[in-house]
Image 1 (cartoon, helix red, strand yellow):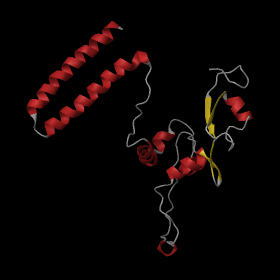
Image 2: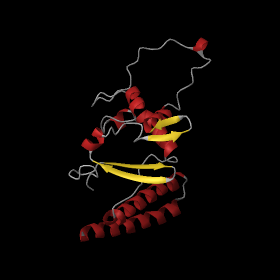
Image 3: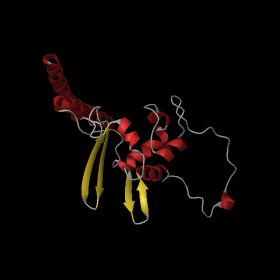
Image 4: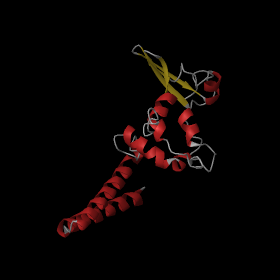
Length: 189
């Protein structure tokens, strides 16, 4: 998709804004988005009665949900340890900076902040931490077969732990059949 502003570069930022029930979609390249102030409250805000509420505000609130409230606990405060802040070794972004901006600095930030991000992903994605979104049609069958095999292997481990060996043997045979089918498909392509 081409940028709707300049008409030259590929659009890499896609905005959907709904105001008073009217949906507006805007597709911009990074340069045009920066020129238009892509981080401004008008582009990224959820309007509330109190004014603008940015996506960064929403993400910051989600990330800080597990932080205990300090109100009324002044006498219970303990001296802070001289801990090094949680930081991505690759780009140098701190977790505190991330909670303020709502943007990770690089792909390695996911691993650096994993202990903090996993609970947020579980809350936001109904307990799931693995992406199971859209799959290109040409890859759908292969991915479906892989997921089915993984699920059956997980089930067989549970059956063995519960000493249900007959059911486990039946499932083992199903897994072998699926693996043969899967290998046959890979040989065809």
